[in-house]
Length: 278
Image (cartoon, rainbow, N blue to C red; front, side, top):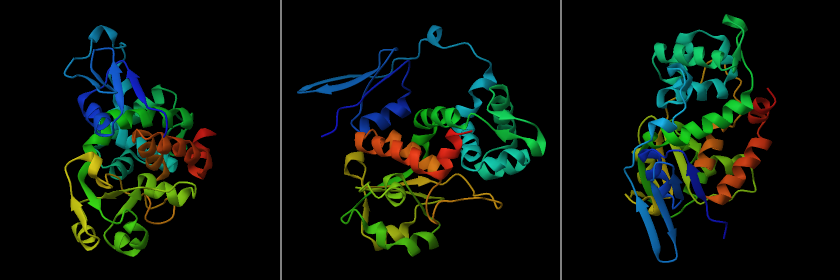
């Protein structure tokens, strides 16, 4: 068995704490929130508020790329860097956000040194650093809000033979299911499906029943918030979520095995290597 994971942070918001507890990951923060199990002991403290004196004083815009809606914009710029040189309206459309949100995120990324140039000459730099920061923000601010439903399938690999059905339903594979197609070393035990709505017909056809407890689920449906740009250089096989998201989902799983494969995906995927080299 892999080593246990302990998350230590200045503050763990309750949405992130719900995810961590559901995954069986221990955590502790500076505000006094704790979920810690060993042997027959369980320490569970919730509801402590962030100590404002511990929060760095920054300009309001400095947080925009890593808020819930801002993280959607940052995700699209990382996944399709050519978007940086397009209009704010196109970036907003790709990320499913308001034009004002996209504009604020762009301005902050410029201020932070992640975007240089202007107009059609605007481009992403320090992409690897931005990817790391975005993956952390995804776990804290965006991840939990995307869930549409959790399911259990008797055949945990049913999706391997359902490629055409998933494509027809507008579903992209994410998480370890997608990673297993990018890295043959990973043998997935479940699947994440990204779709605009729950693909009820596909799930019913493959006998996936809805469950409430995260530990019973081996299929998770999440909201697909992005639209692939028309002028895309997308390199993933059709039907997979962008590798930026696959990487982040492996990290946020809390599973040491998946986190190990996240590092393999980051070093092996062409898009993520380009970000790290920018």
